[in-house]
Amino acid sequence: MDERGSGEQSRASEPRLWTANYLRAWSANFMLYFSFMLLTPLFPLYLSEEFGADKDQIGMVLSGYAVTALLIRPFSGFIVDSFPRKAVLLVCYGLFFLLFGGYLVAGSLAAFFVVRTLHGAPMGATTVANSTVAIDVLHTSRRAEGIGYYGLSNNLATAIAPTVGLLIYSWQANYTLLFLLAMVTAGIGLLINSTLRLRPRETVRNKQPLSLDRFLLLKGWSEGVAMTCYSFSYGVISTYLAIYGKEELGITTGTGLFFALLSAGLIMSRLVGARTLRQGHVTENASHGVLISMLGYLLFAAVHNPIGYYGAALIIGLGNGHMFPAFQTMFINLAPNSLRGTANGTLLTAWELGVGLGIIIGGVVTEHLSYHAAFWIAWVVNALGVAFYFLYVKGHFNTNKLR
Image 1 (cartoon, rainbow, N blue to C red):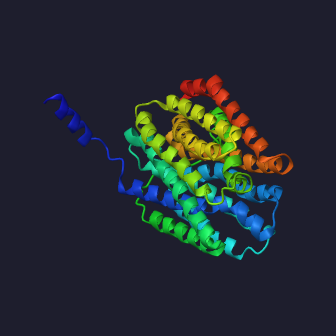
Image 2 (image 1 turned 30 degrees about the horizontal axis):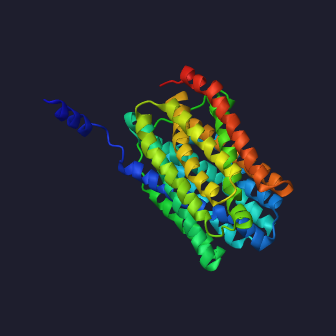
Image 3 (image 1 turned 90 degrees about the horizontal axis):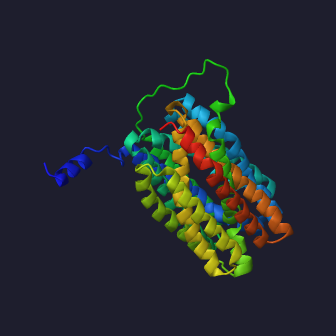
């Protein structure tokens, strides 16, 4: 048999990546993030217009979801590892769907804060459960590649949903319609996940007293610290993006384009990065990603015009598209299979911690100093995370990885 024939036979016998179950988990994750991102860039405007909230109040109200998501995620990983994953996923996704109805009836800033804070718990738990199920249904040889492609569902939702939301806002400023659309989308995702067909698996039975490493992957502490720095920057910019563009740059409908460019960068880099992750280039992908993202945050902080605004979106997307799946692969490779949910939960806990801190600190800084000061702080924190990655995290992973 010639070399070409051998290569074709090898590809034919290769395990499938896009199985029915993987497509279901991928699509449900798209719906989850679409419903979430449809509203996210508009919430600061909604709170300002409907309740007269100032920047401090906006930061505190919107950070509520991040706090509950942060608190629930370590327990989510433990629950996902300890109970049937489909049942856990459907319960969490169902609560995420139902709480969209709370935005429709919240008639005060305090009521909105309660609903938003409660919504963080099922959001945090669902992302852990859904991503763990997606990893479960992947063949071992396609896992790193599949993690990269799975993130495309987030990225496509992030590209499309804010644009749809902002178009509806610019046409009618109809928040009720937006809340209903988000709820319907989440309901579709719940229905998709109800069709998952998962093989029975042996769940973790803890005969020993519970310890911290059942809720957080302690071996991944340094990777978590670095991830928190990167998500802090994203938390600052993504939350105050729309109101900054409107007040200082005169950009009233361009936030959708920002997220579209961000997602275009994410998609392009994930398509390339998924192949290189499959070849084992985990730390190389992470290295490229954190450096490119740092450049994007620098551009956003330093250049206060539409070129800096939109150019940063594409660059940050290119960087994060390499960085995030590489870090997720690092967490998975640091944990035994029985702690896969805990590994995913730890990664997302670190991300949510940074986002929450970014929202809160960003709100305080913009209220008392300026948007520019907040964006410079975001870049400095990001740069500290990049330095820590090269000085410690990269070597720590190579020393402690299990596969």
